[in-house]
Amino acid sequence: MIKIQKNVLNDYLNLGKPRIGLLVVVTAYLGYYLGLRSEGSHMLSLNEWITLFHLVFGMFLSCSGACAFNQVFEIDIDSKMDRTKNRPLPLKRISYKRAYVYALFLFLISTFYLNYFVNTGTAILSCLTYFTYVFVYTPLKKVTTLNTLIGAIPGALPPVGGWFAATESLSSPAWILFGILTCWQIPHFLAIAIIYAEDYKKGGLMMLPSVYPDNKLTGIYMIFFSIALTAVSLGLCFIKGYGVLFACCALILGAIFINSSLRLTRDNTIENAKTVFYYSIAYLPILIFLIILF
Image (cartoon, rainbow, N blue to C red; front, side):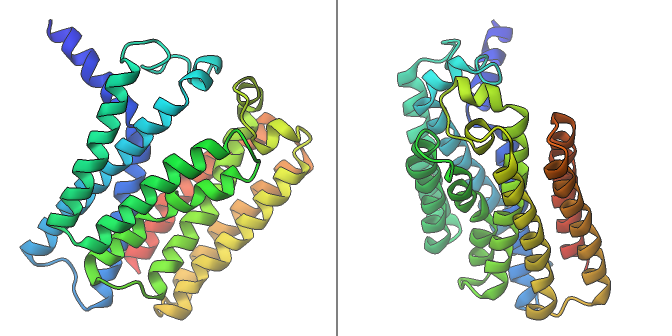
């Protein structure tokens, strides 16, 4: 009995894609921390820590709801792909109706929670993230190869929500964080799309590597956004006064990212795509650590 209950809980947790939720929590914290720091605070008061808890908990619930709706709307697609066919919905471990109600419940409770315990602006930004992910990005995956660019928007909004939770404003540093997350996501998710190109094709999704298998256009996107990522991260030096040491670290990190994208463009192999993917996973936490450190 206990094992069955544990399996059910795991299924509902996986419906919300907790790894994406972790990324949302970390980037929301980054925006919140930098927002407080911009106002001369360093999270020393109990109230600031309580607000942080409410922020990340509410954001995690909202993200889980959006990801659950994504899986509700893509049951047929997920059932065709090797990468996703073992998810709870394709295997019918959770019914369509229950998953729909669960996703809707998480949306409603997270919106109320953020509005009540954080502020209205953060709740609105959370709703914007939710709707662009579920009702714009998700259907566009079957329509246009631009879906990755559009999908980067909801993925980049959590630090903006964190900043607003701390300052109740949307000043330049919040949009630099938005730019960093936007530019980072493009090469990261395109690398995944190269690795699973055939799988995405089976699912009928319009991913660049599936539509243009020579990956020349994909490579151009990855190089451009790797360069843009480096440039945007350096924007913190001009807006927030980050010094030469931060600039050097950001340049080194960016140069490695650009080089890995160039190597993939020159030699279109799964191994080189995996190199970009794994480096992108390392890049973001290192950059976040440097932003907080400096």
